[in-house]
Image (tube, rainbow, N blue to C red; front, side, top):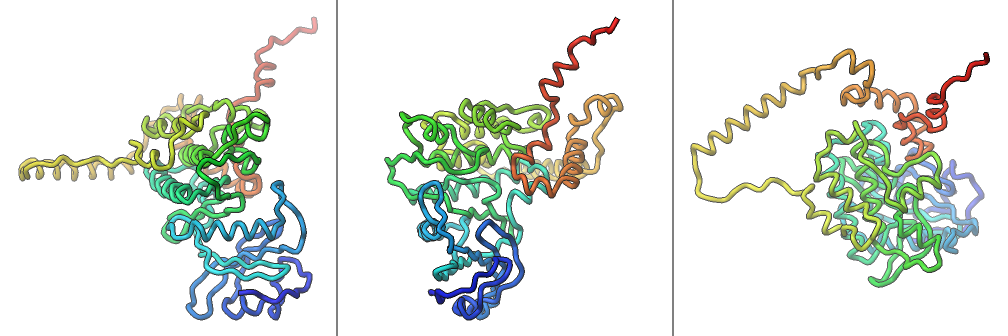
Length: 396
């Protein structure tokens, strides 16, 4: 469906002229603004015939600006539409419901995800348990497996580009950097978000003799996301971006204490295999889904034994009662530990981090993941540390 090409030069805070976009307004009733970008506005809208809610992304394509790949905003948007249609049908990928186009605006109507971005959810809860991380990562890897089966690479996977629907299921969105490639094709252009870039992608943009990169970059981003979900901050963050990029290229990160003390070894093993510097050794999405981290306990098969079954049921009930009571049992805390290292205690650590996010919530959302990681930076700067270690000279 194509709207008329004439439109008045309004700011995106105002809705485009109803006469111009009559087809869109005949079908949908726009509501409040959900978000704004540099050249786009997202509004909640209601389909008049069915009463269903959607999210309408209104993109101003009147400017002839080009991205680093030489595409105008209109060309990039049309390419994104074609990619979305190519990967449609997977439950964990955002569904494009409708498209309207004029010479100055493009209307993209998506399914509405009322729980917002995974990044905002993570800001509220600080970090996720292994169980919740397992549910999100399973959905993410299934979506990536489907995307790669269509010979498409996303190239910008991050919590800001993952939405949560009414049932807290994920929806991968923002396919602006996505590209369909041949199985043997290699890419060389630099795109994505610094903290989630794979080493081979950085090398492709730095060295002329690089082999380029392929779909493996999405699995590296999955490893960064999984690390971030579990402890609340990314693995390679540094105040100086050049140092952070060097850490990425060298695969230099750590499972630091105390945040990782309670995380199980299979979880760390999966992250290590996703954050492999060599893309040939990095797990594919299909291999990652078969990892021990996602495997449930298998029940033994054999003849039914009523006595053993009853004993197992009783042990399970007793264990559940103890676990339920444990929830209300305060963790023992000595004054010495609270005074010297309060961050080591998980309960206090979550309380401290939660308070920090309540105070600096607005700053974190604007600064994205880099400033989010800064909240967790509880180590002294090296120059100050050295200054304190030097003996004080006497004036005498």
